[in-house]
Length: 48
Image (cartoon, rainbow, N blue to C red; front, side):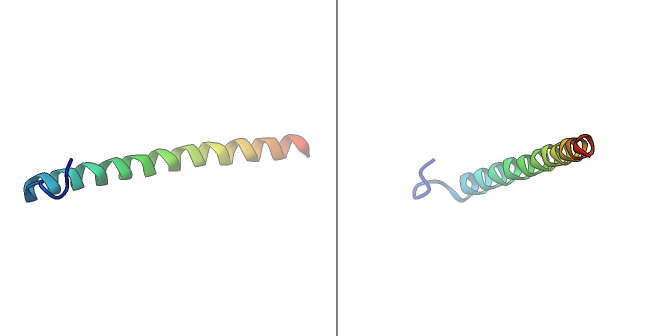
């Protein structure tokens, strides 16, 4: 998308899409981090 020639509506639509993608990725990253935390905890338990 050429930002200089895009209409205001096109800019808003692109903005909303990008914000939505960022939000989805943040949620996915939180889920991955929670799983990693569980793995680390299990590894620590096994090490004693």
